[in-house]
Length: 333
Image (cartoon, rainbow, N blue to C red; front, side, top):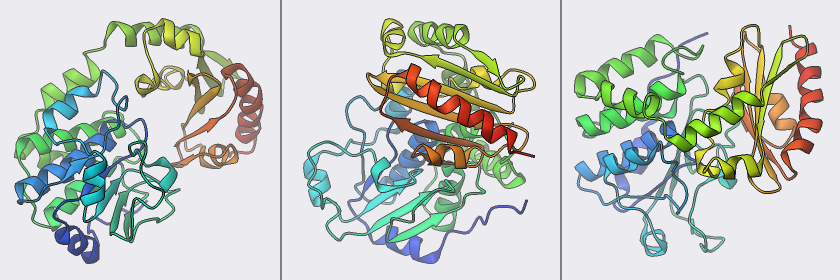
């Protein structure tokens, strides 16, 4: 597979350069790649004399990822900031409905102002006025790194740490197939700038809260193998998530539990953090494409990492999705 194009379009650089008071936006339930990309751009713009804000509605952050917000020191956007913004920069977000914006905004909150989109989801709908979507890129943070370098925007050690966090997590610790030489070069450049590899590794891999541990215990206990061992799935019901002391923001990468079993070609995690709504995380191994399956349930994402949400309890979601997933596996090479 060819390397991702590391060069952002000149129009993207020009449009962002015109913004003085942009609001940076990511996707709902932001992960480290989303947060790192959003904060990375915002911090570079602050260093360049701009006044950006980051949109993080209350309840967006998991306990695990809160330190990234504290590290970034970017003010959060309120209604006045949206009203006075002269542009919007949306990162790691495939469609408008996935934008993590504050409640109470008017339907036309964009109001004709420039929206720039930087993303690596193959299902991106190109909803920005200018879009840079590279679905072969391992992470959005890798693209933001290239954008900052191409635009000659400031990159300090804190910004480097934030971007490194996104690249490290979205590549599964540089172990997933989309990890290319360009990914490693970007990470190396960030380390040379001063990214704190030890701190990021500790906080994201070795600083699990008791509540997160309880939730993982549930995920482990509820893991099942079907389809001759090719499909592993796990569940966490609304009550199980609540009894663990967790909420919607804490559902992150727990799909790694069923994914870790030997011989598994597809892993699925069903979580009902909001009562009556099940979030489904799909992961493919050994070249298995899960995007079409996720799209059949109204979702999207990447070929080997996708997701969907359906309005039903977790037990009903399992009954609907697992047979379709086994059938999808039967149709894979």
